[in-house]
Structures are given as structure tokens and as C-alpha cells.
Image 1 (tube, rainbow, N blue to C red):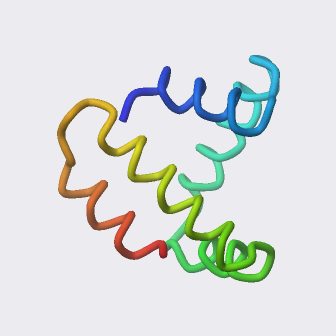
Image 2: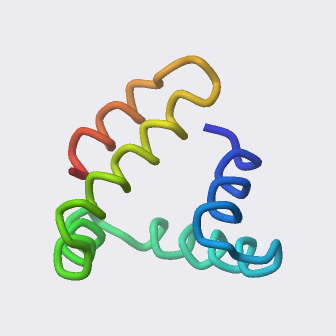
Image 3: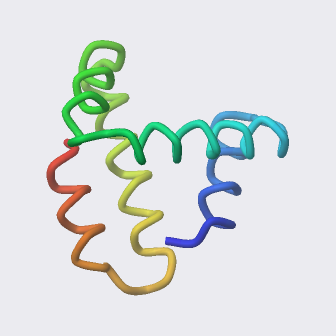
Length: 83
């Protein structure tokens, strides 16, 4: 996944400004750095997203994973665990 692809997807899908996307990515990176596992993120998604929204999120994650034409083993593992 490329950073540019993630920024583009967030800008288009959620209609965010470039500065909002940069701030969101910075905050997300800090959260991930402090996280022990993915449970805290998955549980929030399950609490606040209905099934259809979760399916859309997983589809978006796979689009990002495939953006470079190759699935990294870490990307495959994370996407599989997060749905």
C-alpha cells in the first residue's frame, strides 16, 4: 500500500481536505504504534458500523492492499483478521 493511495482514498471516500487527511493519518499512526493488538480497533468498528459499512471498509482495505499489484503477507494477515 502506498501513502498516496491511502490519502487519495480518504479524500475521495470521506470528502476530507488534504490537511484533515494528513492529521488523521498522523493520529492513526500514533494509535497503531501504541497498540498491542488489533482488537481495540476491530471492536470500535463493530460497535459503530453496521454490517454493510463493515463490508465496505474491508473492500476498501483490500483495494489499498492491491494498489501496488502485490499482497504483502502482513497486509493479507491484517485484512483477514480485521473483518
